[in-house]
Structure formats: structure tokens, C-alpha cells
Length: 349
Ligand SMILES: Cc1cc2ncn([C@H]3O[C@H](COP(=O)(O)O)[C@@H](O)[C@H]3O)c2cc1C
Ligand SMILES: O=C(O)c1cccnc1
Image 1 (spheres, rainbow, N blue to C red):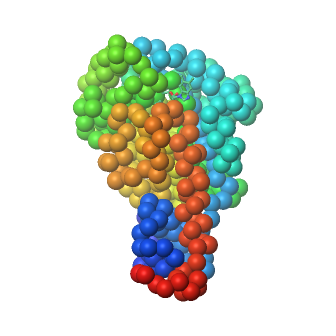
Image 2 (cartoon, rainbow, N blue to C red):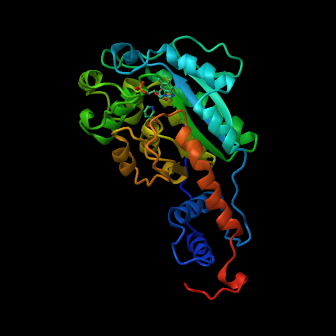
Image 3 (cartoon, rainbow, N blue to C red):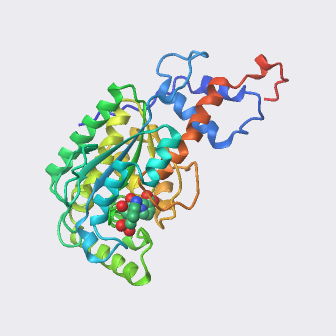
């Protein structure tokens, strides 16, 4: 359903040259240099023009919410009701993600992808695929039609932001139990033992952690014969919010928008999206390394070096929001920093 083209590499040499000619020792802006190069590859679609500026326009934080059947079985510190309660908190502006979005100038949209009880808040977008998924250690989370519908919802959402001039989306999520789903997706996509993928999520104790490992082992065995392609991985193990995050990544990549990936759950969606369309990787910016146990391995599999490492383990898109000033800094130094030539500084390159 998506047609994702890789970025154009025709300008690579000129982009690198422009970065190298800035008044600094070669490579001295570290990860910001590779980020600027990536953004230039995405945005400079015409033959190279030294005066063409990079830009972040109308950046949007899309927070996808959904409930998980497995959350009823003792794998989180919180009950599923907290998903909707937090969504109401997002809608009235009181959560961490609201605070950071206000600070960073990000437009926040919250999407109900299928909470147990629908959000009745007028500000929440209704993209419901059901009333929570089935518990993945007992049944398939959803049918294949739900995955298809989820991709289509995500496509409409991204199209709307694109049409209003947005060229960067950041992905966040809310869904009690979704670190279980994300760990199972990671295990299926990377063909790892799920025990290497599972972490403590919201901060469960040893007993709940042992149970989480056990239930996820049951889930992997239950779906073993079906989870050989990314769409079936989503249907068997996914959450409704993870499906729509995957769709949003693909829809945005198709439109050559940048996509900022938050923590463990958003990265699980990225694993699936990149498996479906490898070129989508070109558009992804990995915001931070989460404290969730499996995250470094997931990032490694995507050859991703996250911008920040703050020990966050919250989700909601908080890490992605916090990375926005770094992304803007990469754009600004590319656009505005003087070259050796222009500044009259002896070229050290
Ligand atoms: C009050 C509260 C606010 C949150 N905001 C994000 N999450 C995070 O925790 C959940 C995943 O962890 P687990 O799999 O352990 O349930 C997701 O909803 C995630 O976004 C929260 C969790 C809680 C309790
Ligand atoms: O890394 C994340 O996104 C994360 C970790 C723990 C709980 N919720 C989200």
C-alpha cells in the first residue's frame, strides 16, 4: 500500500563538502553532522544548490493510544484504565509530553487507536480498530483486516499533516502493556529469544518480571508458525497503536517527511516498517536510547545511533520531543554557519 523511495544520493558529495567547509575542525560537530547530512539527503531532492536551506516546518507529535489484552495478566504496574486516563491528561495538557511539546513548539495530536473505552474527549482523533487487542499469549492480537485498516488510518492522518505544511512527524504512544507487545515484536523481527527482549516497562518488580517473561514465551510459541512476515507479526503480537505507528512511518517516508522515533515501542514499529520497506530507514531519526532493556539491541539492528541518552523510560513521545532542538541545531548549522572562505578563516580541511 505504500511506495517508499530511498533518498537521493546524487548530492552526497556536495552536501558533505558543504559541511566540511564550515568553520570548524573536520567532523567536530559529531552526530549533528551526520544528522544534517541525512536531513539534506531527504530534503534536497533537486540538483545541488548551495543556497538551498534545510527546514523543519510545522513539526507534529502524533501520540497513538491503544489497549492490550495482556495488560490484564499482571505484566505492568498499572491497569488498562490508565491508558484512557492518560489520554484525557494529554487532551487537557497536563502530561510530560504536553509540557515538552509546548516547550519545543510541537503540535500535538492524540489518536485513539482502540482503547478499551473510547475517548470522549473532542480533541482526541478517533481511529479505533477495536476495544483493546486480545491477550497475545492466548490469541492473535487482531485480524489482518485491522492491520490494513490501521495502515489506512495512519495514511489519512499523515496526509492531513503533510497537507498543512508539516515535514516532520514525531511518534509517541500510550498503552498500558505495550512494552510486552513491543518485546514480542522485537523477538519475532530479530529472531531472538523473547527473554533477551523483555524489560521492566513501567518498572515492575521481580515477580511480575518473571511472569512477563513467561507469558511472552507462551505467546511466541503460540504464534510460532505465523510470525514469518511483518504484517502477520503485527496481527499476532501487535497493539493497535503499534500498527498505526508503523503505518505512519511508511506514509511519512513515502512523502519524504522526516520521522522522529521515540523509545522502545516506537522503535518496534520502526523495525516492522523497515522490514516492509527498507528505504523507510532513510527518513528515520532515532531520538534517544531508552532504559528499557531490549532497546540497544533494537537500535543496533537498525544501525541507529540515538541522539540522546537520558535514562528515560516513559514513552509518550517524550524522548522524541526532547531531541527536536538537536534536529533544529543540525538544520541551523547547515544553513547559517559560515564557510572558511566566507568568514576569512584559514581552511584547516
Ligand atoms: C501513569 C503512566 C503514564 C505513562 N506514560 C507513558 N507510559 C508508558 O508505560 C506504558 C508501557 O509500560 P508497560 O508495558 O509496563 O505497561 C505505556 O503506556 C507507555 O507509554 C506510562 C505509564 C504509566 C503508568
Ligand atoms: O522506551 C519506551 O518507549 C518506554 C519504556 C518504558 C515504558 N514505556 C515506554
